[in-house]
Length: 376
Ligand SMILES: [Fe+2]
Image (cartoon, protein in one colour):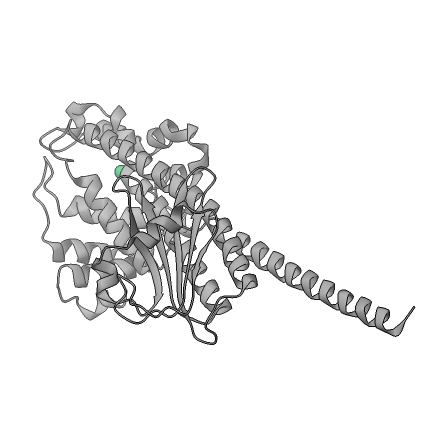
């Protein structure tokens, strides 16, 4: 074999190795991203997408636009880099709409004239439409590469792969967010119907949900857990559907057998929901939301045996019960209710939950707490 032939084969081999290693890198990046995207919300997927893209390509601006079928226009979803007001408020020019119809990305480099709706000079622009399995999701816009005047084919291909992958995950996340909204809507309607049978409980669920979420946020619960906590709070008294109205609406003191009837509602509620097997956390929370931290409650669970959501709900529920009028008593002033909850930290309530509750109530009601309560 001639030397020149060997040189040519060596060159071919090196090119193949380079190609293989870039394919390998691309594959491992996509694998890493598909693991990262799983289970994330739409907002979170967009954040990961933008930070990955801007770490791969040194650009001044990266923007994700979502296609809105109803208004037939693009809506700004997320951006990284300086984005002026005119872009946000301005109408996108036809370039964006044309690029969305094309199967391939639109690349424009060495731009001299001004491009609407940008206020600043755009030198290079890359537009990549991305789809889910069924429909167009949006458009990725990348502008002004810092270290070169044009986008290379390898970079474009990589961004295409990232947006294609993200498109499928975003479509799924949008679908699950829609399902979640539908579920919440149905639950709220159901709760409203339940509360309408008693003037005394109207608005209770909504307020308990608000207080529980405020406590949950201060305890640094994840978005996922906060959503579950919201469902728990909305459904916590669902078991009262089986409590006779004459007991729920009774004016005056309740008899012992009537209390016994009311106390059954956590068990009845969790039994009603037992078919919702994918919401086992919610069922458990409802079953144990009247347990006491010191273990002296109806079912005898103690401390952290009681699910966290139930421990949070117990405080939120008690606060609303004390600060609302009841057929048999007038509401307590907020300060008295807060003091009662603080006094019961470690007895009826989880001290950590009480700590978060006190922090919230102090700022929400602008009240000063005695030092002993702040540190309880
Ligand atoms: Fe309850």
